[in-house]
Length: 262
Image 1 (cartoon, rainbow, N blue to C red):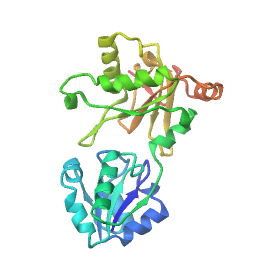
Image 2: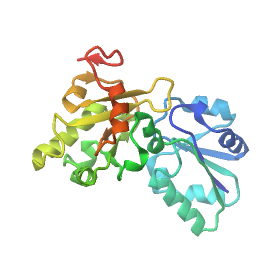
Image 3: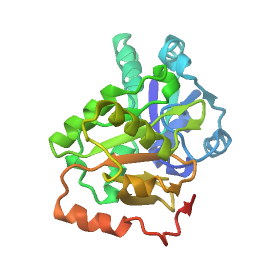
């Protein structure tokens, strides 16, 4: 049996009662934190569950997944995943392979950034395809034009774009870094999809007691320092009047205490 146990958005306390019960029943527990970074340590999750957890690397899960499947053929194996298990296609690929090999699987769902963005006031059903802004070293210094194309397509359709920020070896891409990468593509292509006057939404520490939501022009966002915490950038499409009203509560102002000026 292979269980996909979703941990939720923020820390070890977000795991559901069902997820906790299943994790305690598992004979072997794995976890991966390279698709979603939680604001907690592995040791705290182990203490809560009462069992040792082996953290998997990208290679373990994407290239050597048969090792996990072999164990699941005769034991109860759990894979702990930040957010919701199937937001990341990596986990879908593992489930598909398990089904092909006749291995029973079960899923325990949890909160995800895909639904949590509703806290910004933007309507979830008005989001188009989401994108991940990659670190430049992953693209050999080339700007991610495919990412830009999705933003362009969503804007043409009046849809919002959820921009996930890359994670690599525990390193989180900073909000301003992600914006700079997009502006570099814009500078190269000269299509005016994004510019310093474009308004965007920043959503950080989703699921925590003190989430951070900011709305304003890119030039205003770039003037602020943000903590190195999990965050996303949202590029709004056409706004419904209720979305506009909601976002005004999060508009950046010079006196905003949630930020520190450069």
